[in-house]
Image (tube, rainbow, N blue to C red):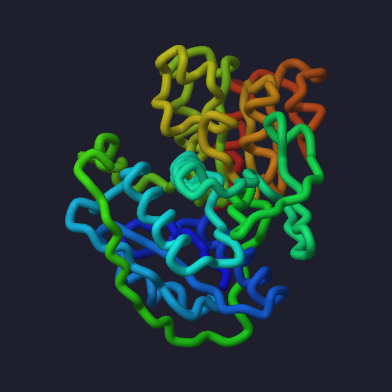
Length: 322
């Protein structure tokens, strides 16, 4: 059995979990075993409906009245108990901040090896994995051995794909043994997202801004362009450090890793930490005054010029075309 750890928002699996499910199905087919999933929190039972086209046969719902939101130690402990009970061939989690934290707790409790940020997994004796190291600048080939293989899927390394035929997903309740101490770290409240704003992780178009934007006020043009294109705004780390925009909009190794159809990088030099976050974009348009900037050299297209001159022209052209 292959077990996939599913993160969700009110019953809808997030993109990285959909990618992990695609990987899980591939491994289940390779090992001729069933695909199971595990979820928790508010709306976990409704995840089953979303799993109908993934190939999953069973959804294990972790039940504990205190487990309404993210609580890494508690979830990791629950996952470890499920692993010890069912002995899956492999457990696949996401390499998101939360997914990696949960899998690390589970690995520590079970004493099983964990291979993080994997881009390819080849079952065998032993299993072979390819994983990202050094912020994605290096690929490592490694052997992975253990009673159960704990793996996190690198963001955007596996394109979500539906199963050939959908089937109903059975729901099985799992009640772990948890104590109040396991809930020392947990989410207790959330700040509502701005109405109408597209999620950075799911946006098909992202307009990114860096130091070259110049100020918080300078982002008005980026906001306008993103709205016209049905996308959202992302930023480099220097922007959040300056307090111009919130950390939730940061693209990069310590922010959100994105995979839009188009990433428009405005005034971003292209430090390796930022490149890691946007490398999965299908196309990159760089707007920069420095033609030798790393972002320009890595871009699909580039405009050499002042973004505050280029963007108004682009915005005007889009409005005229419409």
